[in-house]
Structure formats: structure tokens, C-alpha cells
Image 1 (cartoon, one colour):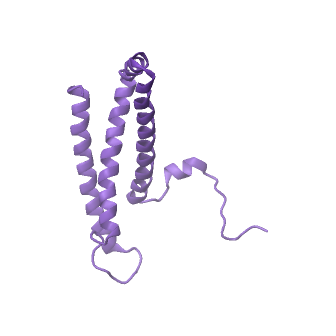
Image 2 (tube, helix red, strand yellow):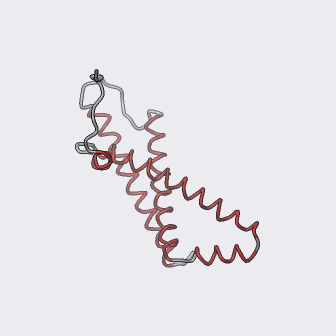
Image 3 (tube, rainbow, N blue to C red):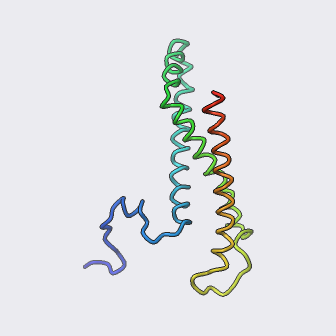
Length: 146
């Protein structure tokens, strides 16, 4: 007998990515998780790549030659963009969890307008700051060659 509370997932990964009637906050939640996993993968690759120094100068030079590929430069830019978003969105989430960005408590009557309106402005500021940080870091990585 089928549990009444279980639902079939007919959309698969498309349903997870598409979201349907999700609000912007749900997309930020998903993007925060994806950028977190991306930063973790970068960290693991960076530790592996750095540990290759123990194998000698020739191995290190060969690995550094591969790292000069333009694909890795694009990867650096993506990692920086992920870090900028993830860090600033994390600060926004801390403010919300501490109750500093939620607003004054009211009766819980749907659609919880006061909380959404207070958080929405903080979300917009976070996205603007993230975009500015991404532009500054991208400029530095692309044009200044660091």
C-alpha cells in the first residue's frame, strides 16, 4: 500500500532546476548550495595540485604548465564568482537567522508580507554587492593577469 504522503517525482532533475512557482529566495538557496559544492571541489583540487610539489621540480613544472591553459583561467574566474556570491549570501543568511533582517514579529498570516519585504531588500543589496565584487575580481583576473 502506497504512503499517502509520498509523491512521485515526474520531473526529475529538471523539476529541481526549473522550480516552477519558486520565488527568488529558492533559487538563491539552490545557487548557495551549488556554489558551496563548487568551492569544496576547487579546494580539493587545489590541495591535490599543491601536494604534487613533493614529487619533484619536473612534476611541479609540468602541472603548472597545464594550469596556464585558458580553461583554468575561466575556472579561476568561476571560482571567484562563486566565492563572492557564497560569502555575501552567507552573511545575508546569518543576518536572517539571527533575526536582524526579518523585521518585527507579527501574526503568522500567509503570505508573510513583512518578512518577505524586509528580506527582499537585503537580498537585492547582497546581489548588487556580489555583482560588483565579481566585476572587480574578474577585471583583476582577466586584464591584470594575476
